[in-house]
Structure formats: structure tokens, C-alpha cells
Length: 299
Image 1 (cartoon, rainbow, N blue to C red):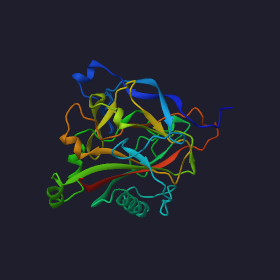
Image 2: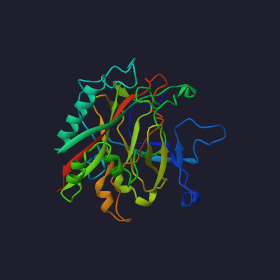
Image 3: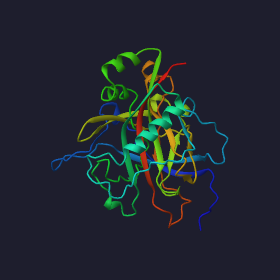
Image 4: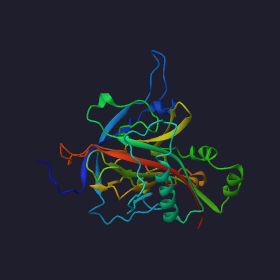
């Protein structure tokens, strides 16, 4: 039987292959209906073994300006019933949870303004052939098991225009303000053993390790980031993460627009992974993630 003692572990993570191709051709994914013969993606991947530090038994200090992520002790009173959400155009069942998450972020950051801009429901499945290609929010998506970030270093700013008014954009576009996009990731089962999340300490990432790629969706074009494998990357996870231990992590930071090639990126690469310590009958992971724009005063 696998050990029930959770500690640092060694696992394989899926990375974008480090190829000369990306110097002349941008990686892409087409998440739309395609005519026969048109490839869904030009991406190639490789798997690499990495050591992941268990934060249950580590003294690593977490913070948004250090590691880029942290876990928050918070019991939700507003989790929506994900079985049978109904019409995908109706977000009413999720609105209370979004409002609760906005309040949580405001409290964590003492933010001037917080806006929820997206959410996703994920559920693992043993039969991978049943994975749903419908990317609507109300349709369960399987955990994403390739190291990535939800934005590139540049793509967050255009995203702001869809959610902030012209007056707000003008007001916050100054040295007095910092705008970040966060992902708040919460388990929807009591304890996650199956397909948990791993985060890469952003202080171990070089900007040159990131590769921007185009993700074409039915409703918009996005630019996200893959991470090329490097031996110096430092990976972390929280074993047996509970439903009241959501992870909050940076996926875009306006300060990146002021930095040079040698500066650390603000965003946090992350990935789900296969947990070698999970029992065969461990409940399949279910989770909800919410993206928010958070505006804070610069120190």
C-alpha cells in the first residue's frame, strides 16, 4: 500500500517541449470547431521529473510578493450546487460564491477594487475519453495537467478593458496603483488527494523560461504562458488540501509591464499532477476557480 505519510514527493510534470521551433512559430491551441485536417494545436510536450515540497512540513514563507501564492483558511458559506446548474447563460447559482470570493480578496489585500471576471468548475474522471471539450463554465472540465499560467506577461492589460470602465482605466493607470489578476482555487470535496495542484515559486522562474501561446476560444482570443522545464525551478504543494484551504495566486501583475528581461515575473506557473500517494479509491477531485482583478495602492 502507498504510504499515508505526506511529505516532499517526486513526480512527473508535463511541460511545453523546449524546441527551436518556438523562436519562429508561436504555440497555439484552437478551442473551436475546426474543419477536417486543421490541427487543434502545434504544441509538443515533454514530461520531466520534479521534486515538490510539501508545505505541510515546510517552513517556506508564502506571500504574494514572495512565492506569488498562499493558502488561506476560509470556510465558504456560499458554495453552489454543481450538479444540475441548468442553463449555461445563468450564473445566478454561482453569484453568491463570487461575491464571497470578492470579499475574501478585499480582506487579503485591503484592495481598492475587486472584480470577478471568470470562473471554472473542474472534475477529474477516470475514463479520460469522457473528458468534455465544451469549455462552457457550467460544464465540468478535467484538471489541466500541463505547466502553465493563465496569462502572458503582457496579456493582462488588454483583459482589463473588458471589466473596468474608461474612467477606472484612466485612474488606475498610474504609479500610484497596482493591478493584479488572481486565481482563487478551492477544492469542492473535503480533502484533495486525487489530481492536486502544484505551484512553482515565482522567485525561481526567469522570464526567459516562459513561452507565450495563443489560446483561441469561441468568445475571445487569449494569450497564456507555458513554462519550459528548468532544474532550478522550486515546486510546492499542500498535501491533503481541504475545502477550507483555498489557494490564492497571481496570474498577472501590472508591475511586469515596468520590468526588464532580467527581472522576476509576477505570475505563478502551476499544474495539476498525478499524486503517487493517493489511494486507488480516493475521491476524484472537484474544484472551483475564480479569477478576479484586484486594484491596490502601491507601497
